[in-house]
Picture (cartoon, rainbow, N blue to C red):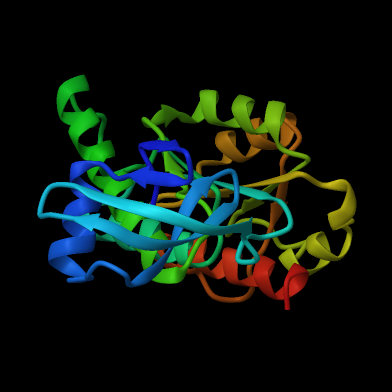
Amino acid sequence: MEDREAGDGYLTLDKDNSHYISQVLRMKEGEELTVVLGGGVEALCEVHELSKSSVTLKIKDTHTSVSEPPFRITLYQSVSKGERMELTIQKCVELGVTKIVPVFSSRCVVRPDEPKKQKTKTERWQKIALEAARQSGRGIIPEVVEPVNFTQAVKMADETAGIVLFPWEEEHGLTLKEALSQIDKDKISEIAVFIGPEGGFEDGEADAARDNGAKPVTLGKRILRTETAGPAVLAMLLYQFEL
């Protein structure tokens, strides 16, 4: 949960978070809760004053969150239909993703909306990320950004990530397990993961990703649905570097 105003050891929450505390959680004055301050910092707080539209918390202690992965994980997720995209966002937030970049690749069934409608959809995706972060005890609220096209996505990943993983059903050599075994987590600050749409990536997209430094990998003998592949890769990263 993110604060909106902080000072003198107190936090004043915005309307939405105040409603969540008072009407959803039904907390009372004097009860304690943990608040995410941003940047992986959490605060142990006590409800100081409370109403339906405004909640003030008293900060009792602050500490670094222990729930975050040792590096940033950016998911470049090809946009899928309705509930599939929402499920992907929810589960990947639970599994430790830092940022989600929706991508319009060639075989996406869903096509870009006009800007106003797309902004509304992105705001809904961000709200789903917020709820998943609350539920799973994340130390940050992962960001869901406005969608980009595939060409923009591969350039963004190349510029920001130390390693770019590109799961692709036509890759039969390098496995994800082998690719992960080559990573020194102490030297990597960000990992990017590309996930294709319902129909998969085209050959030309795989070539473009490879030309921009991505590692095409196989996830095994079975072809995963687009809403399964992202959480599967995130779970494998968690197993490799956190457990």
